[in-house]
Image 1 (spheres, helix red, strand yellow):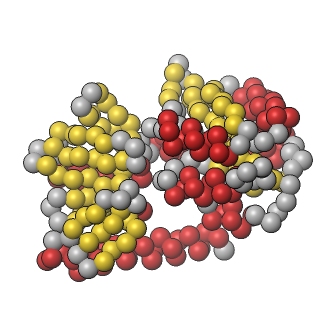
Image 2: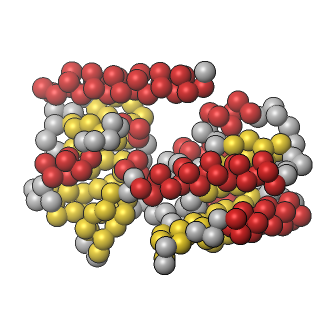
Length: 260
């Protein structure tokens, strides 16, 4: 889950810095301090990483999910670009700002939906602009949370973090990348919460699927990116495939238009 919260009217964000040069990390932290002075309604919890491997280990083993990633591309070992691509494959969709000494990775940066691509040496003006864009995205993410009562309390969940939902009588199981939640409500009530988000589609009476997490649709079987296999009722195959491919190609078209 995201660490973003609101306390006393102040927005709290978790920010990960990753660069194999300590001096570069120091400079970025100085920029962040200056940016916060200009924006007193923001507060950060900053964590530093000196390698992509260390960052990925923290994410995989401890479920660390920063709200914002400030990431160098050229590092010893795994590159920042490789780390970003792996995080996207894991389903993490936080804003990413790249720092680099070259423009050669600019196209790949857009392929992982980086919000900014800054060429070193950094300056405060360009950094502050990148932060304005990133903070705007983070605020929108927070506003998009769905608040659901689950066993153990209330949870705020980003819609795209939901891989799929399975109906079990009066309970619904919500499957996320690293968590599962049991919600006491009918499938109809859950669908009322999710149907406004274009990425969700119903598959028979038992499943609501996030089409952003579908790996493949073959015959009567759907493979999700968490490894789950969903079987489509035979009389619903044509209907679901039509909805999925309509969404998929519309999504690609939107992506192309945004790049033009």
